[in-house]
Length: 357
Image (cartoon, rainbow, N blue to C red; front, side, top):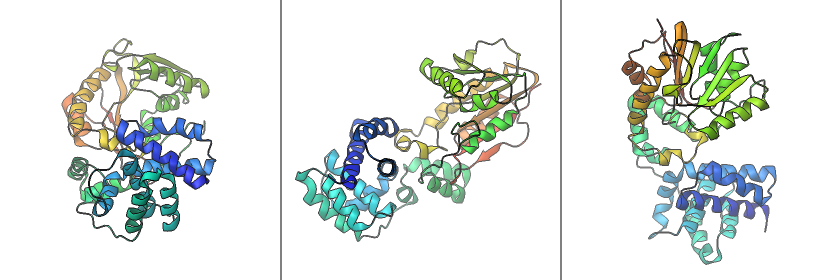
C-alpha cells in the first residue's frame, strides 16, 4: 500500500471515530498517527485532512448532496467527505485525490466513492448561505455577525477555517500571540503576588512567572493542575500550581498585587485549534457561561489588594461573555478592552483591565 493510500486510510478511520463515535479529533488522531508510523510529511497531511474535513463538513455535505442518494454508513460518508475536501479545499491534484481516496476505501464501496468523487471534481459549489459556505452552524454565524458586524465576523470565521500557525516564546513555550498580549496587560513585576485563577495548562502563568513575580496558578480540575505543574517544571518557572475553584480561591482577600481571570468560555474565538468544537457548542453556551463568568469575576475582585490590578480575558468575542459580564459584575473598565479578532496570526481574544478601589 502506498504512503498516500495509507495516509488517507488513517485519516478516514479518524474521521469515522469523530463523526460516529463522538471522539475529539485532537485526542483521537495522535495515538492513531503514532501507531501508523508515517513520515513527518505524511503525518502533517493526515492532520490537515482530518482537521480540515471536520471543520468543513457542512460545506462538504452540501457539495456531495447532489450525487448521493439515501443515508450513508459512517465509513462511506467519512471517505467521501475526505475526498471532497481534497478536491475543493486542498491543492491535491484531482486524479491523485480521487484515485488514492478510492483505494483507501473498503472494497464494497469503492465503486460508489469513485463515481461520486469524479462528479465532485468537476462541480462548482453554489452555497445557499454564508453559514454553509464557511461551514458553521447558523447560530454561530448569526451571533458573531450581531456582535461584530458582518464584514468583521465573516473574515474572522474564514480565518478560523485555516490551520493555526505555531508561535513560540523565547522560553520555548508554544503560545498564541493574543494570549501573550494578555500576559503583557497584567504587567507582572518582580516580587509581586499574582494569582492566575483559571491557569491550566499554564501558558499565561509561566509567562507571568518569567517576569520574576510570585505566581499561584489554579485550576478546578486536579489533572489539569498537574499539567500546569509539568509545564512549569519543563520551563523552570517558579510557579505554585494548585487545584482550586476560582470562586473560592484559597488566598486571603485583598492580598494579590494582580489577578488574572482567563475565564472558561465558549471558545468561539479559537475554533481553528479545536476542529470539532463548532459542532459541539450549543446556542445557549455564551449566555450560560456569561453567568458563570460574572460570578468568577466578582470573586476575583475580592482577592486584589487596594490599587491592585484585575485583568479579565476570554477567547471569544460574544457580547454575552465580554461587555455584558463586566456590566453585570458591577466593575468598571480601566480603559478600552484589547480585542484580537481571529486572523492568520492569532486567535480571537477579548481582555480588559478593571478599575479597583
